[in-house]
Image (cartoon, rainbow over all chains, first blue to last red; front, side, top):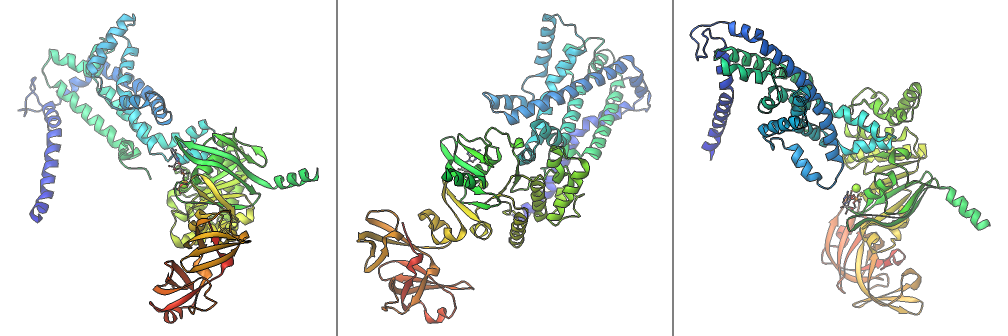
Length: 270
Length: 366
Ligand SMILES: Nc1ncnc2c1ncn2[C@@H]1O[C@H](COP(=O)(O)OP(=O)(O)OP(=O)(O)O)[C@@H](O)[C@H]1O
Ligand SMILES: [Mg+2]
């Protein structure tokens, strides 16, 4: 028993280290490959250069995809925060027929494969005679990310003491005032977290986006996909390295100013 | 005419009136046909075991729940049509329910802001309220930076600053440790008297209820069993539930029988005669005699003083301020006799024969 106790810790550490290595290894390989000089991806590279970074930053489709992606993700994540907050509120507040079903449906993403959603929206849009514009892409992303936002807000909402609402009401606050002065400030971290993840998910989404974008609306992942179909040089790796760096920076900043544990609602409220 | 006038006068003094209010959850009646009247400035406590409907009744008064039937009046006006934010009732919650994202001053000023009171006036009244609860320096702190007792006082200040017609407190001290609780009880009582506000206080701590209240409503299973002053409640419990719930009491089985204008209680060789007026209800049969340990005294056996029974000491329970003798009576009763001095420890050792004297004026039969 004591031997097992003494072994438990190193074994645990080893397992965690292995998992971390397993998760980060592909990213590390990509980053290293990005600094290669040859025009094929090779690991480890035999010569080093920064030229693929230059190409990644100047290639027109990537620039356009970047701008499109930011635009679409900004809209989709903001709308998702609005819709998700209302949805979370409704599920939390009102018990109606099928509310339990709705709750499990909306709070559990990944039920609908992205592929299905993309194809479905494509067919629907052409059936309705809609052009494949930004609106359809935003709608598609909205549907995909709303559950994440809703979940984030819902958890924050559950963490708010229901007595606060009663206290405010007894002091003369109308329901709207309760929402604006009590719930909204207390939900802010949850909203920020929901928005952040919605944005990142939307920005990285590929499967469904492939179906609903065209040449002018294509996002970065779609542009990257189109690129790999033609070239096999390390530009892709360089771009990936850039994205990893930017996302990491984003999260570090968010963590610094908002507290990631609060955003993720890991810690319980006090 | 004059009768109507006196009724009017009496009504005018009533601050809160609960009239035949019913509230069920599913099949269970949490509040079952409750009526009570509370006078202006009165401190009334709802006391009862867990789940008897105290919180539910409070929530009905505050407007967080709607009654199925019955009506609640404040200062004579029915309030069932009003939402909580339209009622002018201060509420203090068990877990304080302070707004965590606001400072103490913002918390206390919240109700005034809702009432569109001017900024300078808000500041003045907030400071006044903080001084009343003896925390004048704490305005800039956050609730989480305060101790439990301090948070509770802020919650009280927040509820009182709006000058409500009524204040409701649901077990406000249950999360506070024992020493501080006694202090808070005195403080609440002082403030309550000073402000003169009508107060409904919920607790399941009977000593808290007995020490603070003008009147106590003992509740059980959604009903008010008795609403009386603490002394009355203790000395003249209205039924067996109240008798057993408040304080310690001996329950002695007996059969009863009417004998002229008296009631005869019998158990084994023991026969007691009580004036019929002291025993509610007619009929004969099995009854319970309720008598408190402090209404009993140990005396020499077989003497006329031993008017209740004779028996032997089964055990001694030393309680610091007094000694309880557990007595096995010859007729099978098991009694607790409270002796004030601890010389009883020597005088009545375990196994000693003794007689038990009862102050029958303090006894009840149900
Ligand atoms: N929202 C609710 N839904 C269903 N049943 C409820 C609800 N609130 C209270 N009850 C039931 O109503 C009864 C009275 O509850 P209440 O909370 O008023 O009791 P209480 O006297 O305040 O008890 P405690 O001393 O434990 O706080 C209980 O049996 C309880 O289970
Ligand atoms: Mg309760």
